[in-house]
Length: 184
Image (cartoon, rainbow, N blue to C red):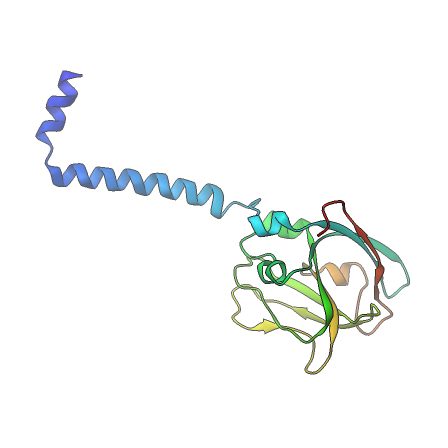
């Protein structure tokens, strides 16, 4: 203990400050890399969204039940997958539900994987699919002047793998939305 104090007294104040700053930097980087960039990270907004199930009919008439986070508020829709880890985005669907028809456009800033957004009218008809790009500053939506009520946001490739297209008979069955107990 005495030798440590003697050794520390020989180090200049400038070097002591340097070592403290390096230590703070190492601790901060460790925290950042283990939480902020974590592949399984979930934001508070995302974790507060309720979970529900929705039925989708693909082009071949086959029914798929899809569990999804349900974004019913403006805040939920604005948050979306932003800041959520890649593993969570790969394994989760997100359904934006609007109280009335809209033409709103969506940003994907803060999302680290390419997504697909399926835009469905009030009756469940699929009117457009948008494919996003990571880091894009553009916004995504249905074609100009096309109203929609629901947006199904999934990892890119989901619609093709499940035979869901605008050209076919794919449809979201909004009346089948199974609302989990935590539904707002």
